[in-house]
Amino acid sequence: MNENQNSKDWEKHEETIEKFIQTIAKNMNLYGLTSSIGRLYGVLYFAEEPMTLDDMREALEMSKTSMSTGVRALADMKMVESTYKKGIRKDLYQSEEDWYKSFTSLFGNRWRKHTESNIEEADEAIEALTNILEKSDDDALNERINRDLERLVYARNYYDWLMKFIQVIESGKIFDYIPKNK
Image (cartoon, rainbow, N blue to C red; front, side, top):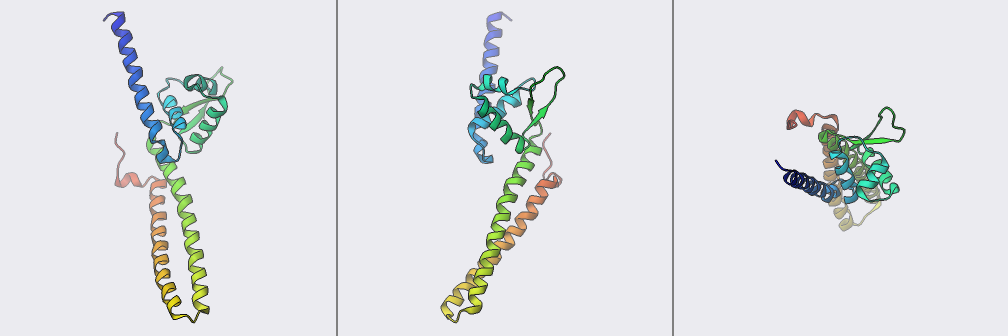
C-alpha cells in the first residue's frame, strides 16, 4: 500500500471516530450532561493512554477550568477515573471502560434522588390533605380531597415500586434479567 493511501486511511479513521464522538456528545443530555462533557468523555474513551487536563485542553481546545469541571462531573458519575503512571506528576484520567457499570451508577443516582424527592412531596401532600379533610365539613371539598388522596396513594405506590426497580439496577441484579452483551 502506498503512503498516500495510508494517509487517506488514517484520515478516514479519524473522521469515523470523530463522528462517533459527536454522537456520544449529542446524546449526553440523556444523562443530564452537556455536549462538551460528552465530547470530553468521547476523547478519553478513544485515547490510547490516560490523559492530563492539559492533554484534554489541547485535544478539545477548551479551557483547563472547563476540562476540570467536566472531569469532575464524569468522575461523580463513575464514567471517568483518576489513575497513576510512574514518572508523571500531573493527575491522569481515563474513561471507565464498563459502560454497564457507568449506566447503573448514573441511572441509580439520578433516579433515586428524584424519586426520593417525589416520595417526600407525595407524603407531604397526603398529610396536608388528610389534615384538611379531618377539619372540613364541606362535602364537595371532602369528596375532591378523597379523590385526590386516592391519586396520591397510587403515585406513592408507584414511587415505592420505582425504588425497588432502582435497587435492582444499582445492585446489578438487572443483569440477571437482561444479561450484558459481550
